[in-house]
Length: 111
Length: 113
Image (cartoon, rainbow over all chains, first blue to last red; front, side, top):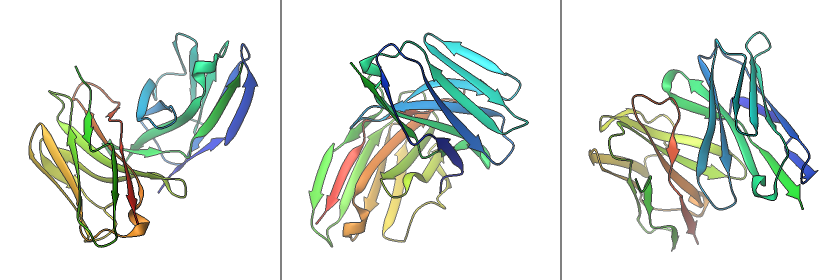
């Protein structure tokens, strides 16, 4: 079962705009991960942020983590049509190997 | 590296038939995971292996499902007998010791009629 919640469920933006999505979780974690899934494909990892980190960047992606609020956000800047995909947060559950995935945010970037 | 390889990519079968899904993890990875994805339930972990040993199969829905990992480069997920409610996309993922994230295969889309 999913133990993370993401919002919004869906997001539609114009190319060039920024997209922000959020993830909340309930347990203590040592890291949180973001993945992207293009239609009909497997998930691809984007960023892993550890519990002692507050912010992390990778290209046009920026992830924040607030352990006091048990929440994380993923920001995609200057979006492109190729960013159209579903984005999932995931975090270890029980042991360091099992991941619990959120329901995902579907992002549509309009040209 | 070819990434995680899954076969078949698509499988259509009739209720009651046996289905076998196959996975080849990334070479050198010591953990392997089987997931199921549906619109209703999202992405669910079915079972995972460490060093070819099943560690947690609590996500396996029922006895009709079984998984094996006879060696470090191959795993199977079997459904016998299959039912229409088993229709889903099944993903295999692997992970190395050094990394915290998982590498997913392209998935097998299973349709049980």
